Length: 472
Image (cartoon, helix red, strand yellow):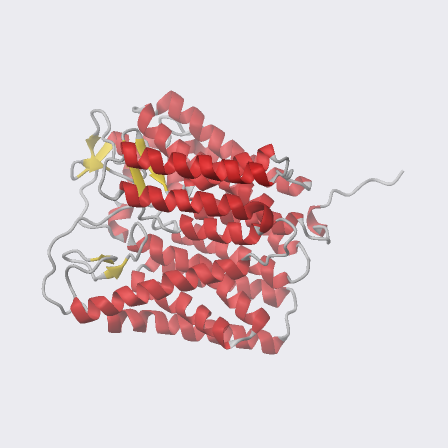
């Protein structure tokens, strides 16, 4: 139905641009709404003719975490109109696919239980339900992105991974350009830099903060290496090296740990699936060289011996700037460091004891505790999951990811490297988000949906998850 595609693209595009222009509360609202409108139009028009291109554009726009449309009732991320428009298009066109087989349905059900538990805990326990509702809406749209991604990439045998590797290349290339500008013109006034007294300079690029920039490159690294393993061209070598090397510019230990774990999972699954030894040596060698180059690149391009920079506020991955009613003081932080994050654990554990089963609600830690006059936050995914959704929701979330990873490890298809890359990417962000929780962002759930689609469209069943039948 081409007419439906065009009509919906026009409605969503014009509506997004109009709302941003009429209600935007910041100088960047019009620009952000223009990007969001363009993304919605392009992805909707491509969904039927070129679904992989539609997915690639959607994922690329979702990585622009710095861009938000600031409206009176909250913030809208630039990929959210596109996700909603694509979902409506696929729904009205009868193209939404069921989550099958049973193992995939089980994984999706676990994610749904996690979200439902967080909604319930927010209604019952959050001091400011409106604040929690904003994060719930963000998370809900992001998880809806998994449904869209599942439909768009189903049956394409992981070919969408090429687009993912190019997104990583573009992010890395921009980050390197920003670092070069900092080296030549810094330390002040360089867009995309995160510079603050007492901290080493970091590249945030076009992302919300340096941690998210580095974590993004870490989860995209397995796709870049997999593309080189498959195609073995010079361009693929350059893409893979830049993705990994630019991660060091974020100067984030959590993201680097996520990178190492993700690559270990990716390479480990290649070993288990009996990939030829010469291929493994080649891929592992390139990965090792790029990992060694990452901190060296940061040391060269981001020297710390510079004039004292003008103090700026370091952005943190907080979903809502709205203050909460009568919060209590939070632990005294020194900086956004590991010690700063660990300092919040005792307070969080004390709060959790009041509602351990279903938790205390989305974004509710900042409703109860302040840091320098602003809502505080927990930077550790595992603790956040328990705090906001209780042990029930956290267990469901963990089980959902575990089932998905088991399916990726055991399913056979056109190329086992595709499965290994998704497993490595998911493990990478699960590790890196223990330092910066950003699970509500769409990029994570777009990857989850694409990974589920790869498993669902595999012609070979999952042997370890088949339920044996008794013979009569």
